[in-house]
Image 1 (cartoon, rainbow over the protein chains, first blue to last red):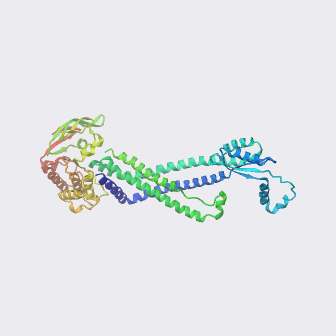
Image 2: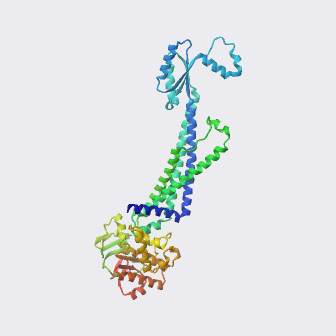
Image 3: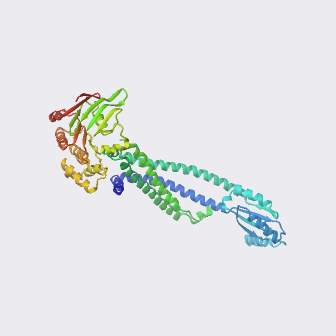
Length: 299
Length: 218
């Protein structure tokens, strides 16, 4: 009996789509376009997120050391720095290395350095922070503590850059949440209402089935399966379209465009994002059917 | 088979659609329900198959009180009743065969049994050659015969017909009443609401007359 019913429900759902191919196609198309807009937003947002996290990774704190420290003192300072919870990695740059890097940077104008008798550059530690502390608050509290370490003369961290980046990221997050929220709401309304319309078109059928003696579930289940199938096909269509659009854009993008953002490529949706999009399609189709069929079952 | 005790139904508090109806219909009866438009004929029938619920009184069908029947039990009651409507109520996107088969699918009848029984009733109403047609391709009389076939395919104890010939000409109406008579002869209780005085008087059956929601003669 249970198997008989499952086969019947699947058959009914499939036949319903077949009988109403035109309506089903329009519904799939509408859902596809709604999800396409959402997908475009998702791609833009997740790429911006990736770009900003590479920017964040570039944040580093430099601690300049006083001159004339012994090796033991330097090691002890390094140990102190390493013991801070924000630290991801620490690199020691000796006075000599600092000078040779400076020479490298100046390259053609190395002559400028020839007049120097003594190496004027201090030794320093390049400190990289853990992801969770790559913000002004995390940096400031670390800088405060580093300044108190004996042997450290000065701490630099590009204050202005960090603060600008941080307020930009805050803005991006809020804007993303508002835009994302509005688009999600629009998708939910469009998908569930479009599925509802396909059910409305068959409200007489539902009434007839009920009058013949069908139980609510017997009437409802094929509609639910149909709603899920249409939602799935719509979101699948959006993923395919998205990929097509993505390919066109990536292939026509000037090679150096990525450099602007410190990146070389735009990433497509991740696999989990794609799966989520498909699941959202299925669930919204199910929801739309469930709500609208329920309305006509009272016969 | 069907008993009603002091049944009333209100769509509007001041104008009851049915007022204090008490009646009894026995197994194997053929009963006409007559009266002018708005007399309450359709409401009376709807109460039997629970498309409407009584506001007052009790209704017993085969000894079962349906006044207190929960919504989830209504489908099981309807499977034992065949209902025919003036506007046929066929599923337009399905063939005649599929329309009739649906009644049996609802009850979980196997496909082979469905096939056997659908062809049997199609033959009974003279539509075996139209099984693959869609309702829209059929005449009004043929659609109503298909609707009757659907109503009787479950072999219900009671057949209810609400103005079954309301949209049909005289000859087609006679044909439909002949089929209903046949079904009654096979033992099914038949209740028909109709305006068609000419045919009713020819058929010489019990008549329940309603006016303004009350029984005026039985």
